[in-house]
Length: 356
Image (cartoon, rainbow, N blue to C red; front, side):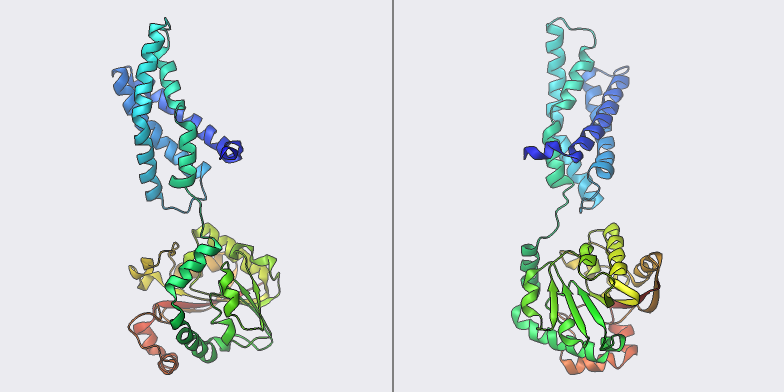
């Protein structure tokens, strides 16, 4: 635990804390011109807390995966819990200093000591709770997959993907292509697509057990994709993945990786839930963090230099676990009647080409 106090992050915390503490202290000094010392300490604490939240959020813990609202809520609760300590320390240290004959600047000294009291404790609470940066590890991801996709449902899910690949996705992929599937899950896409070379990437090590023998598997983060196939891919594919990224900065980083992996002229094929048509259901999955529509994602792709060739805002239904029939015949029929997509489609399909 002590190693956290010998880090650059703790140094930034001290600098930020020093700024907030100075403003806290200065606010109390000004308020004391009109208010009694105990009341001035109480109000100044609120001023310092507001400044400290902004500075910590943006400069000390910028990679936190939690929403600003949750950060603010927990930050306030943590600091309110320390308020009695700071308040009482300031009052009694002030009294103690005066009793020992230190009358001049006793209030200033007492208040400074009180502010410094909870410093190390608050850093650890901020780091591991209020502004936590934790991502799911491989074991947690594996457990989530087991909860979400029951074993007996996997054969039907694979049969659905066989139809989607053969009757739709294969049109965008040549038999000579190298295809990279990021967040491959249980391999439903790669196991059912025809390509010269197939590369699967997933953080969940269990994925390897479900892949065909002609699929090459790599367990790594999506933001490290270029370590797998630098400029070797004709196609990069993701399905229902981008919404799991923690924020837009991570999406930007991932798109940079896709560009590094694709050959010039290579294409990125994307399936994903469209927030425009799923304002409530979109957030029913615990690990959905990033809200995307077909328009916002297309804009992000163009900003990175992709040429968006295909953008279908309504393609597949949201999930195979809904009330709609999932027999492969009905999936085949659905793909053959595009006007039905306008009624039932809740996922977008985008094809973006690397233009350099």
